[in-house]
Length: 243
Image 1 (cartoon, rainbow, N blue to C red):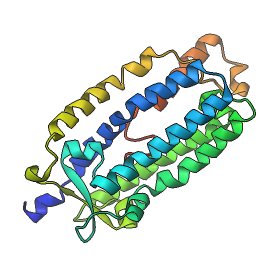
Image 2 (cartoon, rainbow, N blue to C red; image 1 turned 120 degrees about the vertical axis):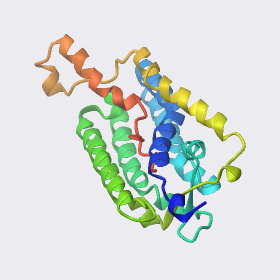
Image 3 (cartoon, one colour; image 1 turned 90 degrees about the vertical axis):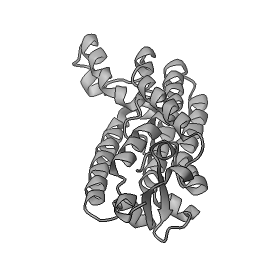
Image 4 (cartoon, helix red, strand yellow; image 1 turned 180 degrees about the vertical axis):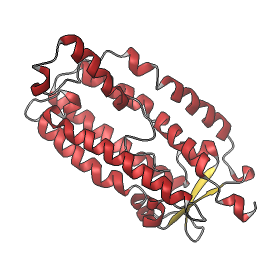
């Protein structure tokens, strides 16, 4: 493969980000079901630990063992260290450093609220501003990542520079045998990720008390639609689709 083609990975990586979000869609659906059908804090806390462990280890584990997440397998790119070797476990962690830092903060806030019986807003309760700040900062981070990626010859994003990694196109003969099957499964999951969450009743997400006192029930119902993005794995807003 010509060198100039080897590092042209922007579009495959963007596609992989969507597909990796889709890979976690069933976990997100189950999360929505549990938060809307269970009001027992200890059950929700145990689920929170399971959900956090799976979502945090998804990218780290796949990158360490395979050099690829399912989305990258489907789009034909692989992550190597900057010398062209397999990633170390430390590099896999550093490449997901934002998730590694933010996830424990989210876990602490939700756990604290659950232990005082506050289960609204996925356990964020009156601390929803943290979630909005979190999502806003993630959007800014992803924008900076894309800008960085577009303005260097090897298309290395900020997390690649931090971890000492590079993403390259993988020759077809080196891809796993069932990559096409993986691609179609993830595409189907991606489509379903925009359908199934809307079929699951939402009763957990609430307006803050200061606003709910002045909003009608119809307004609350309409406003709750703003939260549906939490249940849709778009571009890794669950912090795990570092391209």
